[in-house]
Length: 114
Image 1: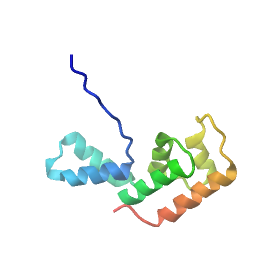
Image 2: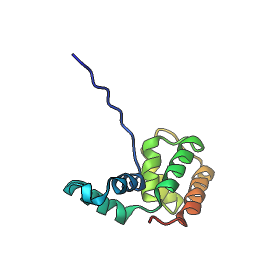
Image 3: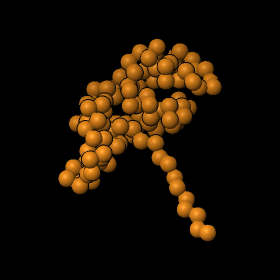
Image 4: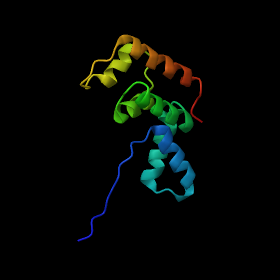
């Protein structure tokens, strides 16, 4: 019996948008077009910015990739909003670190999704 190895990659909404746009809207099926419409409406930064934020959140702040993806997708504006994404975590994150994450998101917020 042959085993197929699958891998899973978590993507932010801007990354999904970039992939679907690369395929070309004329080549997308109905589900993919709906997905493209969704990511166009809800992407808050461009794909490059999203990838940089994702890497920084994981490397510098020690967040799980899944937590980082959700934070980039929603781009919380306050520490209280940010805590919602980290509430299920098994670790307590200092307020200063949360404020630094918000500052990082605020720097990136000026780059609008195209």
